[in-house]
Image (cartoon, rainbow, N blue to C red):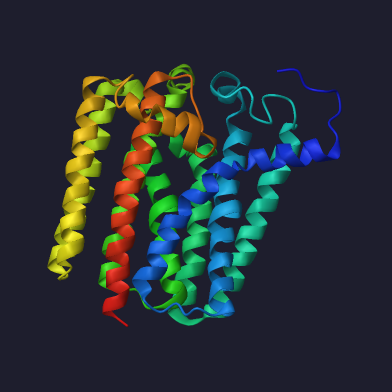
Length: 332
């Protein structure tokens, strides 16, 4: 794409925001909401809503934004292949400006995390501070050498699962209540669901990953087998959530979790039979509905994943929130 010799102030601000990848910010909110609901202790006060807002800013625009920004800083050559329209490879931001973006996001996330942790105090405050600090550290080593966790799916997927699933859930739970065994279970399920989805998200960068020597699952075993591995993890998550719901005495939620599992398997079979064009009936949901949030892709397998992601998120997130809410209600 052609870039003006000198961008105006507004265009520079837009480029910096794009570097933080706003469409990814919302990904942590379901885990935050479920963590709060599982605590059963949030009150409808301005104070508590402001705390929840601070938590979202910490893990969303700042924490997730930092992970996206620092990733672009270290993956410039890969992005020239995979995502040439991103702010740095397109020339709208210099590498130095990109680095400054990530540093600002990092410092603000740390500051907000420390402030929130000290405000909550005690063991719960320490959990909040430790969670955001470790999540930011993982986000850095995910992209930065020498560790560069993203080079291998065996390290990259758990890193994403912790930062996007486990840490936000546990932190939100600690924001208003003690960490109970049920919260640990639910946070762990969110971890594994994030792992399964990030495996499929690698479809979009398979070409650049292969050229750059990154061992994504798609590069190593192909698209169909990647779908199979991810679907196995997702189905186990649903099955464990159903078992937990039943063992905790939540009979009606158990039925809906099992129903969600059955519907998910039906959709998965269609994708395994046709990894490129499966569940095409959901094209309109991506193209005309959620496309601005989830993004679009020129890779057929990644478009199939985007269609599946909409269905899976509805099925899992609703059940996850209901079970978390029942846990919180149990401790009222």
